[in-house]
Image (cartoon, rainbow, N blue to C red; front, top):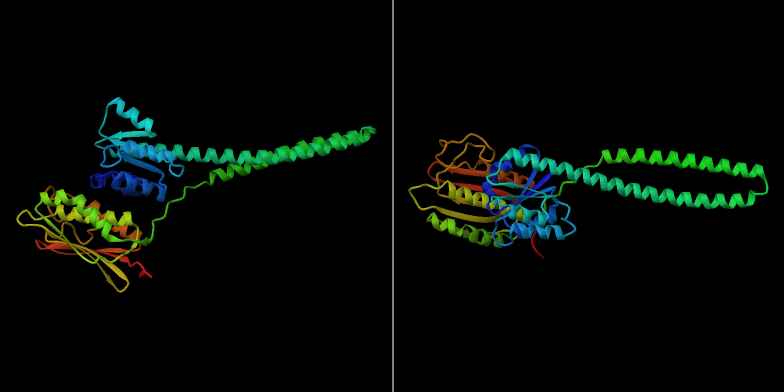
Length: 359
């Protein structure tokens, strides 16, 4: 299962693309800025990186240059996602180390085709490099054996010069040695071909470590500040925040999607209030995002892409974002639930293993 890392400061805009990629069997990871993307790339070593050009902080060009300057990420194919269409921008992308680019708005079929192409190219390159390394090893071994055998035969010839019969016997030994070496080369070549056919990519593991929620919440508060103010909403954080055991980037993605859902599904006739908390209960951290919005926008399977309760166009479709929440929780050994009433709001609860106590 190939891993695709998407680095984009507005990942919710890529929900459909995430759905397409996961439907094709890809494992999808998301980073919200260049620094986070660099960290995720080093930790997970994805097979392909989809990189936005225009982002706050390091630009996509700068992130690509840093990826190519580090040995651990240098060989990962980078495909730029950009709305820039000038030739100079494309040349700059290739100069930074990208292998391809797609223009926004993204076309799922084109993106899938380009990802598939570069995965195949990288697999072929990996196989070729492995084959060359193994052949070099075998060649060195054989050359050493040939040198040793040749030296031994020269010594034998020196001793057997006086006798023709002994010389002929030595020549026969040489012919037998050459035949033996040719047979061994053929055997090693066959073994190498079989080994190359069995090469498989290794999937990166999700991290499981104590996560301090306070920095994540502060960053999210800053990220959503303008949107919260524009909506006339309030975000209240109930402290202290318990520390779960999991992957900080995935937990950040969960909180981002749940806050986006609350702001998207707010009532038009009242002030939105969002309450975020993380409490410890019986060895489990209950991470909650509660709101007084419209209530359930989806049926009981809110965390899968299922039938909506509201009419099309009445509210944006956030089922992809909620499905991502559920999948991220499952990857960390957790689960998600929701309690809601029409017109009374919703409370989303993410259950995650608790981090062990310090000390």
